[in-house]
Image (cartoon, rainbow, N blue to C red):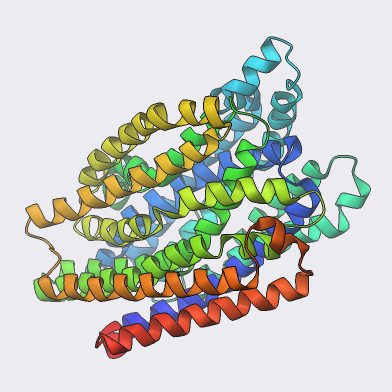
Length: 526
């Protein structure tokens, strides 16, 4: 457990740097685009290849590749390991290349599919028809990002199986730096800032791909790709990967459904969802992704060695750590939504009205944070056992639940209050709870893993500590200034200092309550 804890810290630290740069990137974007039509179009064009990236690369591929590659490292020769890697890279690379070409050629069809509301406006000559045209054009620029980032994810998965977590975790920093660079140096020379941002996405994919080469070379894992659809290992990977295409990326599919529905709502809906989603992804990326990244190879190894006690102990560590971080993060972001949005985004084209709408979306989105984080840790328990079908079944149920929640919540909120986007965000959160519940129940029914009484008592202490922290931070926030308009009147430096002070106060209160309740740091180290 100590080794896992160190690996988790390394990954979390590198991911934290990446997320900070991601927030800086979003600050530049908010300044340039605000939360209007231009922002909606760019976020749409950026979300489609990123959604496919999660399917082909980070989610489904990693969950299928890591257990098989770990098994080859434990039982096969170095030559056989290289052959597997060569065939995997070549096969996946060719498939994703074809998808990329088709996506660029059919960008209008893709935009119509996932932005039906915009297509309908264009088809009928509506006042917002330009959204469809602009999004189709930008997709031609951003779609090649899918090809390069997929190969980058393959390299990252290989490095992870070799115990190298730092390089894959820090690589996304290069994407953020590329977009920031285009905001600074390319935007002044182009009429449409969206085009510069799309070029930044493409450059970011290329730079990330090239960055992995030296590290793979040092480990002797830099191979020449070749087609290997019928290779023994590739067949096993694709057998696991095909169902995992759906199972691992449930939250992303829900977000994509939300994007499609948001295209029917008022201008700004996609932007409000984007900004709240970016804040939601911050703790997910730092904590949940880091923990699930280091836990999958460890679970795969103990599963290969049939170490049942080690499997359950590793799962206990992951669940305990992710809830210790996820529950207070959820309540803290709800309590501090106004100062967070003021400090990060409120400048340039992003005004008070956009911040208020984003804060409503943030409350709804972040309500499901700990459920999303818990699911990220539970899914590797299935993947390590080479069971990717069960998460698919639960993913389908979660998707259907999301659609049902949308039907119940979105249109009433849009018709009566004009905030249908809040219903979209809340539906995603509720679907995340459904998914986490089904995953936990499935592991218990199969006798693989269950939450012990000791773990439940620990979680109860975490909930008490987080609630006390929420109350304390809310009181202190109201003592400074109340609503969004009050925070908007503060100078940026003063709002930043207040926000830092509130975060520090919340962390101290939370830690103090846990210590009083008997929780000790050694419990998180295992």
